[in-house]
Image 1: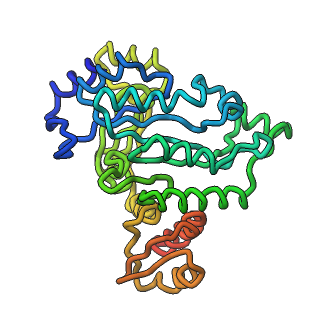
Image 2: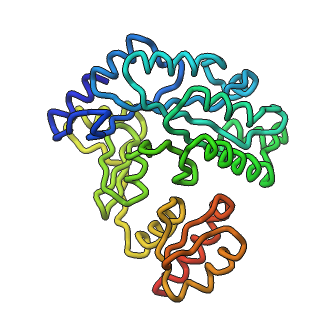
Length: 306
């Protein structure tokens, strides 16, 4: 990590990492078992000032089912080590809407996450993807995915619990204490250009999205030959950009500017308590976020030139 950040500093102007001034955010994503005293000291010395910790759950049964290597106590130990090394800004990832047979207490996981005193929390609902172990188990009936009712219940419980603890639910899946929104994620949602380095990394220059070769050995071969490890790219059309603007705007508390011909469509959402409209700017409520795909599709269709 030290070598990587030093190399980046040699090619780009990186403002001094200063927690007080907030000049730059240097985040690394790690699992609890990755955090050792030696590693944390080196990360901090290299300039890392924010760590995203992949906790997922504190339930031993859930951790075993997910084949996670860390135990229920390791996240707390990891946070203590990070803060002893001078890294105070810690984000915690949790996963919700797990299969019912695991008997996981979502309330307990939320309470244990808050006990770590994180500055940021990211929550993701479990999705069943085809051609994965979970997908195959579900197809065979060995696992029953959470239904929509429990997904909604756990999503709303998290909103209430974290909001009561002082967190701002600033994007569908993300909560931050004041001054602790993830700056890199926020840039993606705002359409800011970004550079992707490494295998499978994605980048965006403002009009073209590109992605690198995903297989490490093939990526390395290309780089060592001095060639661009590009696997694919796409030029975003005006329609593509419009659709993304609608979808990403609805995902955040900043919301989306609504046009005159869209008022009829969004009125029913406001009346249902799924959105708030002020000065022609629409912001979804947590209930609305659970249904945002439908509204995004409707508004995108209205904005389509065809």
